[in-house]
Length: 157
Image (cartoon, rainbow, N blue to C red):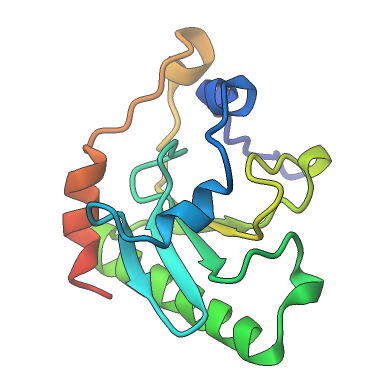
């Protein structure tokens, strides 16, 4: 039987249980304050995750505030997947990961920290990228500042 690899991120509870800003945090990102948007298309955005699991952790989300995938039009769905494809390509060029975790948590019970606005997580992964720090010390090791990650990836969009 194959063993299951776990990606632990106990530091994210700080966001999940912490005080939330008023309104939708993703909708507020669409106002392009200080360069946190890596890519914008007709129907979607790509941004860095403020609380990353790994360096380069991106979120792809529709411009329209929708809580689940059923509300997307065909054009919005195609555009969202194209933005996901561009995100993977940019991460491959900028970071050279060995693989990716890609997923959606739809609804709070499914783990969605931003339950009201549909989004796709794109987490680059490397062989041996997890270590003892998150488990024993409840400390994450993100070796690059978010601004540096933004600058590294922006050119590939």
